[in-house]
Image 1 (cartoon, rainbow, N blue to C red):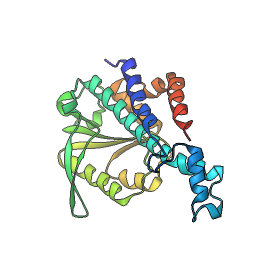
Image 2: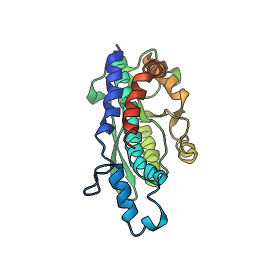
Image 3: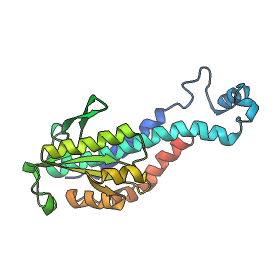
Image 4: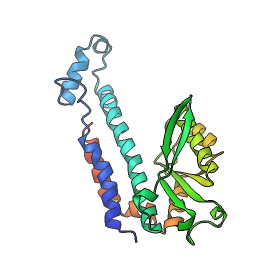
Length: 232
């Protein structure tokens, strides 16, 4: 049974990991925004161009922080989904993942699913047209904003590897602002859901209204995000 307190703890755990991120750590003797602005002003390549401007500093420092936040939000959705699948289908952590080998540019990589429901765990919530598969393998993304060809190839070949084992590859992308080209390609081999369709599928197979849960706890989660963004 889903425990909403545990679900909220998972969300906060991943978001708070960004609180430890120091956007100035890679620069020696730079402790804060003021120090960094002075560093840029004294830089022979940037200072003469006026890049000690507040807007540039915000973009430069904020870009690193937002990238870290973006990754942890992705981890958050993966963690929330994994918990819901485990609770709904009685899985332990060892049953949640399925690893396959994929070959990218003559290099073998091991890729693991973010969730797996084997046929012997199917219940009445599994869609009827999925019942003939030996399992359902899930990949979870908060958003697909990476246009890197190797990442796209890896996801593409992973879907083929899952299919070779009789496992239906399902990709859940929770945002509506992904790059269109990667999703267009991946939708040919993945059963791909995007935006509210992803949230609706989660509710269908687990019985948990994840989007409703996030809305109910929006004030708590927004407070965590604002504390992080205050570092910019």
